[in-house]
Length: 329
Image (cartoon, rainbow, N blue to C red; front, side):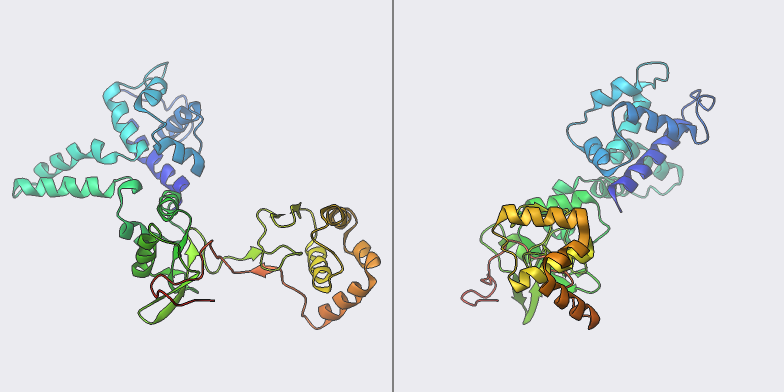
C-alpha cells in the first residue's frame, strides 16, 4: 500500500469521527462528503496534500500536536480539543491512543470480558500494529518488503543497510523476497563489506539494493555499456540525454562500439548530443555514413543494441562474507 493511500484511509477514518461530533455539522459549507472535505481543507492550510511526501511530513516528528491544534481548534470551524486529539492521533498514525478506550468499552458492552488479561491483550495487539517502522525488528521489515509496500519501510531498510545491496529473492521473476537470507545480509552489512552475490545453503543469490527489483528495467548510457542513466543523465560522461530520440541513442551506442566517438572528449560529445537533440537520426547518419550502414544492417536482422538493463547492482564488493576466501565474479 502506498503512503498516499494510507493517508486517504486515515482521512476517511478521521472524517467518521468528525461526523459523530454532536452539533458539529458543516454540510452547508462543503459539497458531498463534507467531513472528509473539512479534514483535507485543514491539512491544506498546513501545506499537506494527497501525495506521499505530504504524508511523510505529517507522520514525521516535525509535525507536532500544537501545529495542528492551531489549525483545527481556532477560527470559524474549530473543534473542541478532546475531539481534535482523537483526530490527531488517527492522522499521525497513533490511532491506538484514540481507540484503546473504545476497545475496552466494546469488550464490556459485548460481554466478552472473561479476564482482565483479555483487555490487556487487545490493547497490546492494537499498540503492536501501530508501532512506527523505526521500532520494527529487521525480520518484520524484510517480511513486509514488496513492490507495493510503504515508502517508510523502504526508507527504514535502506537506512539500516547503509545503502548496501542486501535483498535476496527466492524467485526473481515473481520478485519474492527471501526473508532469511536478506536478514542475514542486513546484519552482516553492519560489520563488513558485502558481495554482489551470496551463497546460502548451497544456493546462489544476486543481491539488490533496497527498493530495486529484478524485473525493473533501467536505461543504459549510450556511450558506456552497463552504466545506468539517472533521469536521462550519465555521471560518467556528464551529459544529459533527455530529448534524444530512442533511435538516436541506439545510433550513439553503435558509434561508441565502433570507436568513432571518444566519450572522454566532453566538448565534442556535448556538441554531438546537441546535434542529436536538434536534428535527429538523419543528421547523425550524414555525419557518420559507415555507422549508418551498420545501423541499417543490424536493424534489418533485429540485432540493434537495446540500451536496456535489468541490472540492479549495488556498491558491493566481490568477496562472499558467507564463504570467506571465495571470490565471486
